[in-house]
Structures are given as structure tokens and as C-alpha cells.
Image (cartoon, rainbow, N blue to C red; front, side, top):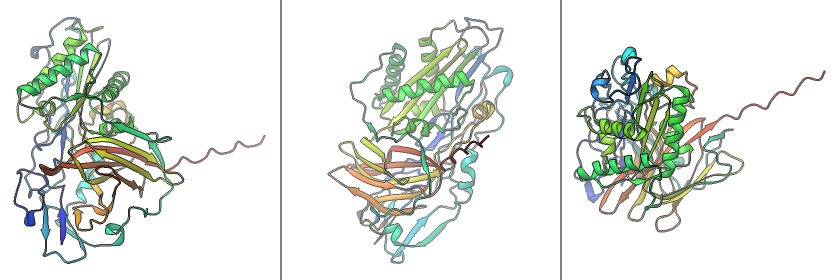
Length: 470
């Protein structure tokens, strides 16, 4: 019996019938818009950004009348394809890997980020949300309706201990001179900063009003958000990119945070020497504006109220007339994850365990080119980003019947305990490789993303030329 699974089809319904009692997984593929991940696949909201011009001076109101508003640029819901599911497919030829794609699926559900500029004299960016150019070519080349590939040993055999030949690559980030271990933050952790505590309390108050469970505090994510906001002010950029070109989900991963990340970002600027309002007022006002968004342009609000989010870290920075705040929401289903570079080759060993009550189902692996330096204008104008589509997938050792559609699926995940797992990954080219960990619960066996790791592999720099003798 061959089982096929397609995580790339956009979902619109739940719990459809499944042959032979197989589970019906819902893969919450994200439309990331305006620093948020929309697991429902809705419209893309903008970043909040305001600017005061010279006439406002210090003081003045942060209310709606102060800033010229522009309609947000957003992603729209794509036509729905067939629901994602795992089925027993007895009609498929024996020994064939079936990789299915819906020809209607343009892959725009791979998270894109939209941004609105509220800049008065500068105006708003023209047109709607843009797809990150780094991923456009990949999406265009994946439009086939179905592909049949012969099942090979590399795809389905017992390959957990057999790595492909490794190219000459080095790991740029995260720094793996020693193993990096990410553990679930302690439940009792609370921010000491009164501004961050107030924003966390407001987030959870708003979630409670909608019947959504609270998010826990993630101090490591807060530090990443602080640094990002400070760097934005230093570089005079806005949105989700700095001039280093590193995408937001890689930024948290490079800091050793391995949850699924989705971000709300806010910018306020004034031409005066500073704000009359205090930082607490700016932060809470920014949050209130995001929560007040209306459908379909309510991506910030949906991020705040996303029931899949388990943690959040809030960061901010203010220098003179520039204020930045970032809310880094995370879905954390891994109790711990250890990432280790093995010697002599660019092979990475993963060892971890999901939280109690969840089990790892499979891991998908996506690729994109290495980050390229951006000018300040390029970084601020890049109004969208997307997670890379998967090209490989790993499943449990010996499970040669489960195939993740659109990927080369290998049975490489080995169980070392009741919940503990391990596997190795070897890249076949330089670039950013993003591994997404899908977990499920016994009472709701639909796999959802519960963790992610992005690793930057690149070609080693050539050795310096020896100095010429005099």
C-alpha cells in the first residue's frame, strides 16, 4: 500500500473522509503577511508604520487623525485546491513514489509578507503585496499537475546511516563550533521590563477575550527582537529585513531559537527630536492599532489571536524620533532540539523530542539561495517574504509507504526512545536550508508545524594569497 501526503495544497476544510482509517492531516501552510503567519490562508496585512513631519513637533496625538493612512497591500486568498490528506492509494503502481501537485496551486500560500507605508510625504508603495523574488522562480517551476518518480534506494531505503557525497561547504550560521541546544522556555518566565510585561499582558487579555489560550513568554525571542529593532534604527530601515538580507525566520534560527516564527513589526517616526509619549504608550498604542484591524486586512490581528501560537517575545528600541517594536510569535512543539555539526563534512546531526502529548510525524526541508546584501532602500522596500517550498522530506526509518508530495522523501528519522528522535542532514548545494518539524497529537493526528531550523551553508572562502617577496 502506498500512502501519499501533499502538504503544498491550500486547505479550506477539515476532517475529510480517509480511506482505510488513515489520518487526515491538516497542514497549516502559512501566508506570512505583514510580519505574520496566516495559518488560515487569508489576506496579507501591512506593517504598521507612521511618520510625523516637521509641523507635528514633539507632543501631538498618535491617533488616526495624525497620520495619513493608505490602504494596506495584501495577499488575497487563492482558490482552494483539494484538501491535504493521507490516503491509502491501492491504484498506484507498486514501487512508485507519487508526488502530486494541484495545477491550480500557484504556491502563493508559502508565506509572503505585505507591508504598508504611512509616510506622509513619501506616500505608499504602489501595487499589492509582492512575492519575494528569491522564490518566484521556484514557484513557477513547480506548476506540474502530477509527477511520477521511480522509487529508489536513496528515497526509501534504510538510509539513516548513509549520507550522500558532501560538497565542499561550510556552515555560516548558526555558529556550530559546539552543539546548539534549544529547550522549551520555563513556564513561569515573565519579562522584567515593564513595557514588555504590559504588552504581554495585553496580548493575553486580547486572546482570552476571543477564547484563545495565552502565549508564554520567550526571553530568547525577546532578545532577538530587541537587537533587530536596534539594528533597524541604526540602518534606518523598516519592515522585516536588514541590509544583510537574512529573512526573519532565519534570524531567529541563527540565534538558536527553533520554533516556527511569525512576526508583527511596528515603526513610528517623527521629524521632531523625540516623542512626547512614553515608550509604554507607544508600544500599547501600536498593539491596539494592530488588534483593531478589520478583515480581510487583519493579518496583525490574526497573528496576535492565532491559536497555534504558544510563545511570544517582544522587543523594542527608541532613539530620538525613531521607535520600533517587534512581536515574535512562535509555535513550539519541541521539548528540546540539539543541532550539531559532525566533523570533516558539512553533515548536521539533529537530536530532539517533542513535548509530552505530541509525536514527530515527518520533517520537510526547503532550499533558497544564500542571503545577498541589500541597500537600505532595498531592505525597506522588500514588502514580502516566504518560507522556501520543500524539496526533501524525512520520515520514520522503514516507512517506505509515506511520501510527502512535491519532495524526495527518505526514511531517515530514527527513534531512540519513546519520543526522542535523531537524523542527519547533508546539503547538496550552498544556500539557506530550512527544516520544518511536523508534529501531531493522538486526539488530533493532523500534522502541524511545531519547529523549524534554518542553516546557512556556503562555499568556503578561498585562502588569502601569500604576500609577494620584496
